[in-house]
Length: 304
Image 1: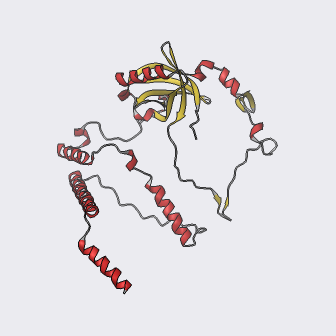
Image 2 (image 1 turned 120 degrees about the vertical axis):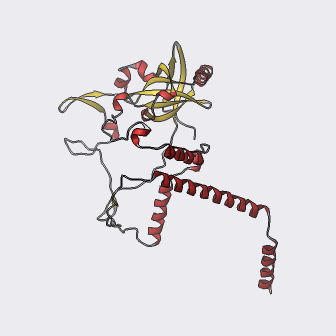
């Protein structure tokens, strides 16, 4: 099934307008758990109801409103929300270009793909290649649903990706956090410890291959589900185990020893991986004569 555009409008780039369509760039694979009544394990449901009459209300009778005084509302239809600022609801307005490194990761929210609409291919390509050559992000605003989002436009391969950003007022201050001092000396880190930590990072460095990572916890939960089904424990509520007191933390940590152990384990793991890979290739490329003879003899014995 063809992808469905979430939003249609244009990118405003100086005096240039680029007709575009917006598509979702991510899909969630969350574990789908249903809330149950533990007395009879029936699913829990929710109803939209009128708080005055207590009666259930269907979607075709529901409108939106803004409460300007206690229990007093201004009704706002989709058309009202659009007319509040027609240009803002139909335009991705680029206000500035900045270096990507200047935007902290805490500001990033959700990515969306932008694709050129009819007649917009050339100017879309112009903006994409401009972003690529300049190495910049386009900082813009766009209205989606009932909120104006700050966003960043970035060239990713052959696409322009719009990533919504948080406003500065939405980022909480870290002043209350008890963080170690910013310098190595003040934090009590020695040159040897830093050098070993860098060696560990170097040993664990590899190309980014996102396909090798997956949600293994979800797989563990689904395995537990199968285990409970097989054991006939589908209605068994597992009680929490008694928590044991955690050992008291010590301020004295031998980082050098820990780093040495980490480096040793990493080296052993790499060697094992290489040996396993080599053995696997050998077994695939060469058939063992003794194994063939044994198999043949077994077959003849069964026939006899």
